[in-house]
Image 1 (cartoon, rainbow, N blue to C red):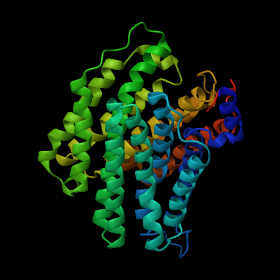
Image 2 (spheres, rainbow, N blue to C red):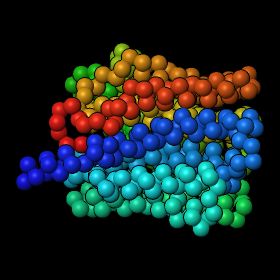
Image 3 (cartoon, helix red, strand yellow):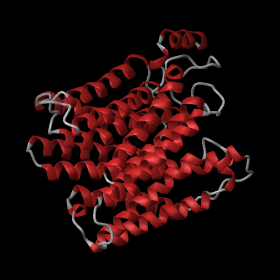
Image 4 (cartoon, rainbow, N blue to C red):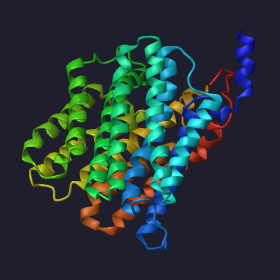
Length: 396
């Protein structure tokens, strides 16, 4: 049986052997290309070409659902194999799912008719949620059911965006995208809360991992989901001092979690400090919303980009650099250039959030350049790895 399984594995092209391979590759390529297209559109180089809903709607949606959705799918479809002990999605099924994601990106970008765009876009996240839920249900792994819940809520947020697109209602589109962004933050808090202290303990050779505080972990998860609901219903789009305590609870809760995990030794390990910095942005973003709701910050977009660029972009880059090495049978020692990539990503977040109000358009260009360069460096050193077999000969 093992020989038969091995022969079947060898018959599958390496890129289709596990979820992280196609989705990390396609997602990071998209991260670079999408920013270049967005810059070209802003400078009037797109001519009369318009994606579905216009360029701003495309940019908002695709950075969360296109880029973020690909990486979330790749990570979870890989992790569920470890969680359950069952084989993950692979081969033709994985290729079809990746093509579904790609078809959605092309349909949106090319301004396809809604009758084509809607089914393509609405099929992807529910399919990922179904695959995850089925695998977890088979082994009754209730501890990971919240992941399926968040994926389902993400699919509902995408439905809200598409409803706004179909009805030409920009507010509904914003509500759906921002709700999704904070649902992604809930997922980052949930997964990051598990792996960051574990990776820190293992990476530094510490004897004991920091003891979890379930009330804190569940409280920040619930707070992020509740904040997403305020955006989905439209309440989060308006200044409302009554929402400041919720945002403060979430931001301070994530700061407390990060402080408990911190060890000065992380700065010597290239795969650790980017994780901690990304989680710091996960605290800065809701605290920025506190400032906005209290009238201290003029534009909530700064807080949203702290989450989208600093937290989501930073955690994605740090996680895919680590996961790709581990699941390809390589040692957890990234190329030295990845240190530059991590630094550039965080510089880009600083430029987009802190420097933009001070320097204007030049900070915007700096942020875009840093983002593109960071993910281009990942592709430079990891693209071949994602398309070739594990070095230890094991499946995956």
